[in-house]
Length: 383
Ligand SMILES: *Cc1c(COP(=O)(O)O)cnc(C)c1O
Image (tube, rainbow, N blue to C red; front, side, top):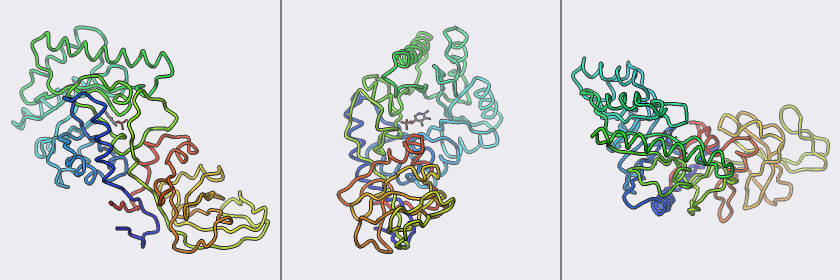
């Protein structure tokens, strides 16, 4: 189960994925399905393993950011539908039909290229149209004019690109506090619905329709589209613990980050710890060296800010600058700390739990980034 020969590792509790999925399904309409967004290696959790677990939960559609990520899923045995949410360069178009992938059409020009490719090679490529309702990232700009509808209509008429769905993406669905943000999200929903309405007016069936990411689900759970697109939620985390939401599912974080104690020593008053000598012992201190550092994904800029870890069910502070492969903690108040003891950087330590929010907050970022930045050299161990 646990690979204690590793200097640092991630533990992932797959049972909690099932619990989190049930919590998501309680929020959304009965007929709405879940597209599992497993881009960036499922936010660092391991894309194939998480996708396999989601398949067991009944998920039949996945979203990734690139062809490479899609191929990783296919190679790992995932046979469900896969939507590439981002850009695929022309020289990789052949993977789309070879591996039965669905490509996002982010502009008319791009769709034309894909159609030309399909024609030249006599293949049909599946696609979903992305409409830009305010994110200004990818998608056919959804200003209220007829041109846009004519463009979209044209895409549905292509022969070598088979449009099977249409979607958009929220920009501030996590924000309820500012009236301006709330109006913005309502405007995005309105624009998206208008597009859908006009497509149907033209006698076209839009295919599979989807809009909500995790916060779209939490704050606008009643929208009745075919799919929702959560990434964070089934991993059991929020972007930030301070963000208020309309619904409050009981999500359980599935990831814990652990490392070993490699050395314990007593330091005299006046001794300094680590590079830069930013931490000086005021009294005699017992300091433990831990085998995890910024190359593993612990942000260096949280050094000397009072970040806590758990060891033997107690809290200890990170002291001194965080190094590439190591960091130091003050364990003066904890008896019997020894080489080989396990330190929890975040997650579950026996009956105690330390949220990832602490690290994200000190690093001035969101939990989404914290989990993604845990580097590839840290083994993922599944329970
Ligand atoms: C990343 C992403 C999602 C999932 O976002 P979460 O906030 O993790 O739920 C959904 N849709 C698109 C287009 C994305 O890029």
